[in-house]
Image (cartoon, rainbow over the protein chains, first blue to last red):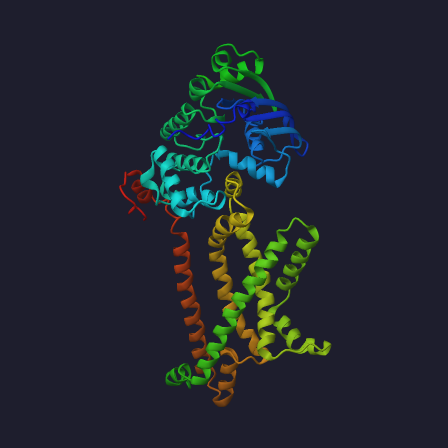
Length: 259
Length: 243
């Protein structure tokens, strides 16, 4: 079964609504400007990799999209719904977006399966049996159905992150947000997580991904968004970005990370 | 010349009058824990409130009851308040004092438990658009509770022994009844040896209970042992994999 991103297939006009639209978004931490006039449009099905030096606002950017962080100024629309700090809209947007964190953030006191079925049952009102079927479907998809009854502490990092991806998919999101999903992993576990993400991308999921995995960016991304000091400095297709970075800052960044 | 009589110790240990005092001690402790936890949870939630008046009230409460001796609190409640026309029976006085005092300690334990739950847990719950009540009941509370068990156990151990202070306001628990027995025959060492044995038994039983609770609630998180990880990496079939 393909991931259900075509729910609006019968309503062609909906397709013109971008998955994410940010207009002049600002975010401050006290005196510090974390996001500085961010304008970004993400089309449905588009795969974006956000990169840049640490502290450049990459994580803050994607965490503002599902209101884990509150933006201070500007407009954010997700699937046409305005993120205006109203509970109702925030909940609607969070149901439409799945998020994967650097530190997995699985619920340690629940089994893998319980981690996956909690939101479908409480948010979507599924019965336990329905939610279990759904969870097993996605756990199979991330290739760990046999770990369903394990607790997160019993799994390797790579397995935990794949469970986290399955858990997010169980709400059938239209957009997936990845916040450095492989940064906390042992090197030999990075691949299994990236493979899972690639599979998701191939199925047409809209993805925004903060990552330092430039191989993944080259292979999967439709567009690279390069940030520095809270600003989007450069946006380009991966080929252009890696071969002909326009900004001095991006050139310096690429020199540092590509060995 | 030695007067110590081991046989008298044993007699006092099995003294029915003293045994009833043990039951009172257990009852005071249990009521103190339950009442203290309920009140302490409320105080902790107030203390964590973003409203500075609400958190200020909680802060004052904790400052006051942790900053004064339980003995004075008990005496004031029992002998002082009647001066203002507020009068309770002895047991109620002891319970009020113990609960008010215990709540101040437990509130800080509860609060530290909640603060120790990683912020990532709340973020994950938000990202899944879980309602606040579900986030509290299913995510934050169980994890905070697990972190609270060791200090909670410590506090209950202290409370168990602190109930002896209620003897001062004539609650007939272990200490008071030991005093009464002592005054009959002045076998001071023998009586208090029996009382000491009872306190040791009670604290030891509680230790065992606490260890079991800790084990029960940590079964899912203390699996970082190499064996568990190795097991996790071995492909498993079916659902028998729960360790």
